[in-house]
Length: 327
Image (tube, rainbow, N blue to C red; front, side, top):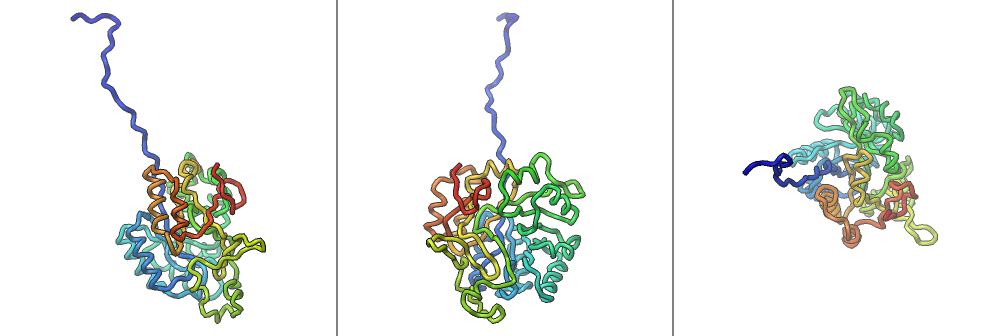
């Protein structure tokens, strides 16, 4: 058959395949409450079998909580690393005594794991000695501030919990990230689940509540697996006291914000442990953020399983932190 001048060969039918969005790595933050040793070991046994990519271990709140000592945390870290997890040691947030400094020095001397700095006072001692994570309590609220920390051997930074997602996009945008001296970008981690740590104090609020001295507290916070809830005079949940730490009464959840998180340059999500239902929280974040499942109905099931509530997402949207918005 002769071919006409306007004949065009038929191309095989093809279907465009959309590229999968980049994975949002899941980080299990440090246990902020005072749990018994047995409870801690059970919790981390579950985490070892979970979808978590990174696990932050150690005591961040109170130096008197010694259910596990540094040698125990290092041993636990090795077990988690064997299970395929990236392990980070957390430094105590308030460095108050010579004993606190000695512990920080020992964390800087070990060469197995990165260390998350809880406060600027720890940076000078840690920088250049161990891989460094900038914790959420450092005052990094601008691109210039992040750049000033970039040459300290930083692995990634955890954004302050009250920063909105659009503010994060200005500090470390995905198309123009802040880079380390070797040219690699600094990854951003956002607080995606859990009660928000608002403040620390040299005073122990739990001890004061029970009318006992801080240095002879009897470890009253062992009875509060998820902190001690405070309500307003109108009987509305207001704050949670957790030893020297003050937390929000609400638990932040950004389960439905995968698109906005990626647009803001976030590549890691911090999930803060709670005593009940946390394994399901981890599974749901993996399913929704990285497997494309719907978030519908999941948070309601969390509350039913004992996850502390109510939930909030106000800070991420430039609203009061305790608010919840579906927008």
